[in-house]
Structures are given as C-alpha cells and as structure tokens.
Image 1 (cartoon, rainbow, N blue to C red):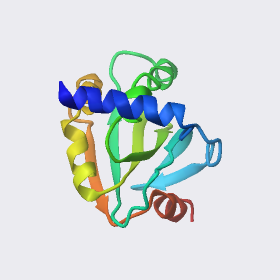
Image 2 (image 1 turned 135 degrees about the vertical axis):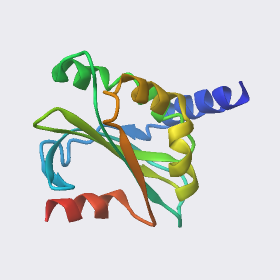
Image 3 (image 1 turned 45 degrees about the horizontal axis):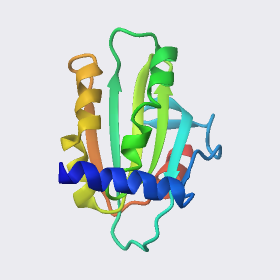
Image 4 (image 1 turned 120 degrees about the horizontal axis):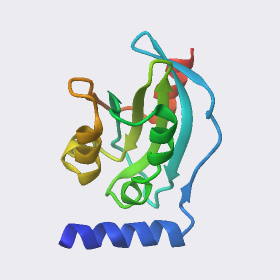
Length: 154
C-alpha cells in the first residue's frame, strides 16, 4: 500500500509541476527494429528534476489478442497515469508494425528500475492481454532513448 501512495504522490506531483507531455516529435516516423518496420504513434515524456548518470532503455514487443489494432492503440492510453507515477520512468515511445505487433520503448533512470518494470501491475496486465508466446522484452543498459531511436532511423 505504501508503494501505491508513493506512486500517487508522483503522479500528482508530475502533473501539477507540468513535467508530463505528449511530444509530437518523432510521431509518424518509421523505425527498423529487429528487421521489422515499426511506426511511432505516440510519445510520453516526464521531465525529471534530477540529473541522472545511470540510465537504461526497456523494450517490449507483443501482439494484443481479441481486439482490433485501432482499439488497442486507443486503449494503450489507459496505463499513462500509472506510468508517470512509477519511480524512474522518464519516457515512452509506442510503436506498431504492419502486422499488428506493438512495441514499447521506455527510458528509465537506471538499469535497476528498468529491470523491475516486469514486476509492475502495468506490465502484468499487458502480459495477460498479449497473444501467448508473443511477448518478449529486453533491457539495454547505459543507453539514452534519444540515441537509441536515432540509431534505428539511420
């Protein structure tokens, strides 16, 4: 319960301080990830008060079951309040491939926090909604998301 209230405090603090944004930069761009083209359809950013020396990118790939792609794109906004309340969350890019695979690319303040993301409520819900056998993820340590995205565009 204590973790919940800390997250709630971060959500309110980030929103009230104006640190949360949905930048349009990069939306619509195509990234080649693992020899598959993914189009960025949304970006979320939380500006940090801290200067971080450690950082990590978390990348998850899966296909939703049951609902059409357009509805899942819309529903993918539901976890935003929870994301902005997670300790160390900085940024996320939502991407989709032509064959309906979703990929989330996240910036975390540290490798430890990136490695902890699969233990969160949000990730567990996502895993339950994925077609069995389609979910995979990786943590890329010591990486800034802006450098990672730029490398995928080249």
